[in-house]
Length: 149
Image 1: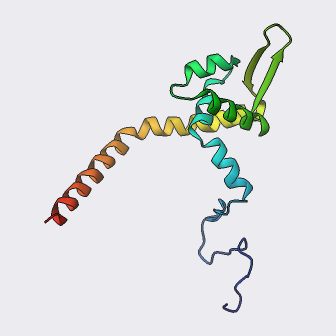
Image 2 (image 1 turned 180 degrees about the horizontal axis):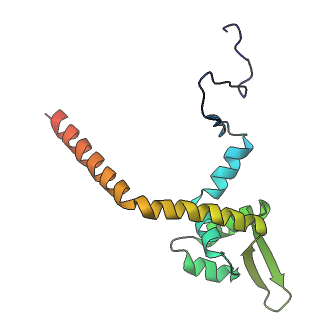
Image 3 (image 1 turned 45 degrees about the horizontal axis):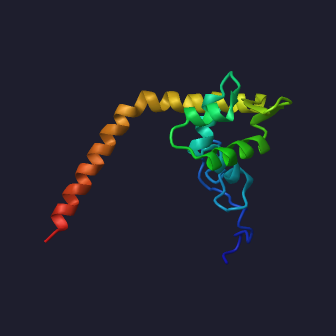
C-alpha cells in the first residue's frame, strides 16, 4: 500500500476540488445507510405510493387499484417499508371489518416535494431523452450491422 493511503475502505479523500460535492457520498457498500434508504425510496412502487398519497389518505384497495401492475404482496411490502422508515402513517379504524388508511407523514411530505422536482425535470427533458435514446439505438444498430458478416 502506498504511503499516505488509508486502509479504511470508507475513508476516501479527493485531491480534485469537487465544488463542495463529495463524489463518494453514496457509498456503494451494501451496509451503507444512505444506499439502503435510496434503494428503498427510489423503488418504482415506493415512488408511486408516495405520489398517490400526496395530501390524501387512501385505503390499501384504493392504492392497489391506482397502481397498475403492483401485486398485493409487493404493495404490502412497500407500505411496510415506508412505514418503518417514517414516511407513511398507517391508521387502523376500530370498525368491523377493520378499515386501514395510509397517508404521508410530515417526513414523507418533504420527500414528495423532492420527488415532484424529479418528475418536473423529467417532464421538461423527456423529448431530449427520447431523442438521445433514438440516436443511441440507431448507432447501436449500425454498429451491429457493421460487425455482422
